[in-house]
Amino acid sequence: MWRYLKSAFFVGVDIPALGRLPVNALAAAGFFILGFGHPSFWFLGLATEAVILPSLAFNRRFQNVVDAEDRQAATGDSQAKRASLVQLLPSEDRRRLIGLERKCDKVIEVYRNAQAEDFLIDTNRDALENLKWIYLKLMIARYHLLTAGTDDTPEALAKRIDALQKDLEKSQETQALRQSKGATLEILKRRLANVQRREDSLQEVESDLTRVESQVDLILDNAAMQGKPQTISTDIELASDLVGGGMFGDAESAVADLDRDYSQVRTATKAAAPEHS
Image 1 (cartoon, rainbow, N blue to C red):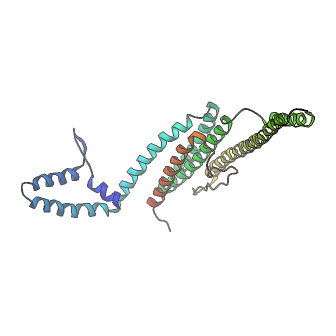
Image 2 (image 1 turned 180 degrees about the vertical axis):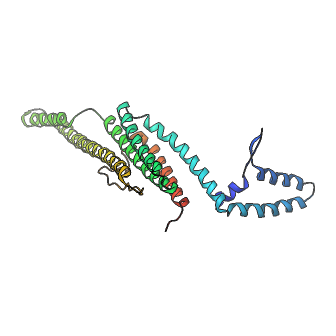
């Protein structure tokens, strides 16, 4: 409610040649200044605000306008953050992302051509935006997995481990040298485990990317074939863990910020949606 009261206090009116002016705030300032000449203006100003602020803040239409402006501001900021993440991707991944986005846009176009209700189009657009966001996060995770760490493969590390083990079995070196090589062997084994986990994660991410693409293809097929527009279900269980953290490298903070932004937009959209029996 506080944000509605704040918006009511700073409500603006477009004035030719002057732009948008916060008329209510200016009026309140005027009463405050005049009150130094005669205190009754202060009481008049308080009485005026006591009528204007609640009448606007509790008005459902005014609240809808405030919610729409907040969503628009959040969306604009989110799009800028999202664009910075997309720029991290190699050109082939960006083309793949654009292809998915075009299919999502095609779904909305089909629903518009079918003259679906606005609330249904908005709900489905949000569902598709969520899928696109999951898809981008998967791509960022894969980019981090591919660029982080060394280029050593599991096969190469396994060969080094095998060679060092054989060397330790046959070597007549000093105890100190054997201990050093033994410590190196343990490090290589831990590195091998890490690289194998990275390979497993890459396979999971690629499988999830393919799954999201197939989901969007199915949504597009259903939209084209169904006689009556339906609400899109985008529930999808991923093999990779995008929630646990650590999957996005230097982009971890930006991804977390966008997760919060998109969550707030979805919550606001649901709150603004009309009720249907």
